[in-house]
Image (cartoon, rainbow, N blue to C red; front, top):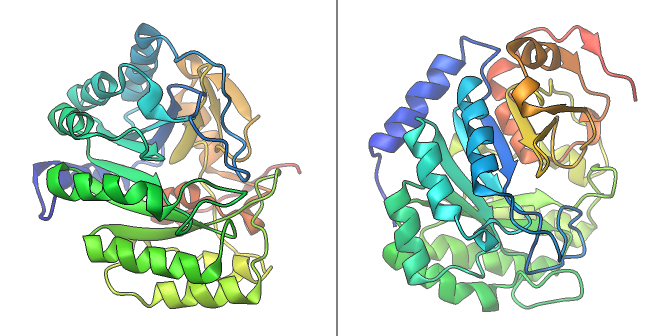
Length: 318
């Protein structure tokens, strides 16, 4: 497991620092490489059971377009990205283009050889979901199933490992125990909020709110720049004031090669990545999003932090 500041980390900080002076430079793009998933969690709206993986040549062309836009981080997304037969090759292609490759996964398909391939390819970090101690009717992303994979990651992974638990998908006591176990392994643990079909945060019950505040007190849970303080008002049903830069600092690229502001609110601008320009990025940078008040999407919040001091004069219709 990676434990120290290395050359890839230095490059990440350097590229983010450069991007801070250029609002037209995206920090993060998520790219769907397969819509298919080996699970069917009750809170997820971004998968199916039948789609074929996106063709490797097509994906490489889309990654070339992300390079054209000077994207810093590129995250391979699904469905389950490890179902793509060329996932490691795509990681290497991103790294060879001078961008920083990451991945979102449920972790079920990780084996020793897979981890070693991802090491060799230059994966910077992986985020894996784990929502409770045992399976339930909403999610199968349980610690019982994941723990053997965590042991492999601890032994072999040279990339960063962060575990994400969806609050509201299981038992409050369970998610607290999951967080403790993850931290004992030496991995980062973050919380995300269960959302409705519109992409808005669902209010948590009192027990889950208490569990979340307890988890927030745990040492070593997240690096400070990844903090999730924006979630505190959301779990209580309140709104949060911030300037969302989705479509600019962060955007979602679907399996058809269309750019969306974010994953939960797909549908705009729905423009092909080959036609996406610096002007599109700036237009969305200065566009105030009507959905931001109850937005729980961590990638959007984190990607927008550099620019809270910059104006956002244009208003998006509901």
